[in-house]
Image 1 (cartoon, rainbow, N blue to C red):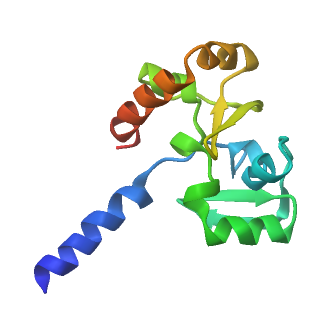
Image 2: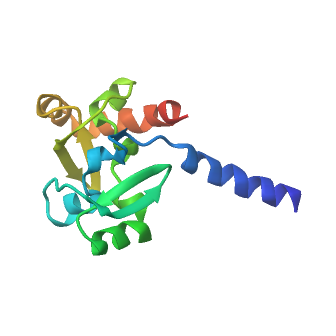
Length: 140
């Protein structure tokens, strides 16, 4: 029993502790993460449609997007807590420009600027692999 309780806590703790990029009190500068997937465009969220997840307020363009995110945030949230994917690949965190984005294999990646995004796009698989390796240390 004690071991089982410890394992549940150990598995739950890292996910809750992962940081989320916030600016102005909202994740990903108040943009709707679901809109990137469905509308293929950065879309400002509305404070009326907010969902709290991982210690951050996530805003959405409408209630349907909010509800979709609430049902599966791991799939719809941006990689690396919404920090710049290039920076994470390089071993540090940096803020993002919501207009510098890409969806790769169903995952949303954000970058500091469109110029940085162009660098990230030169080797997307390599940058994702390096970022995946760096993220646990940076998120710790």
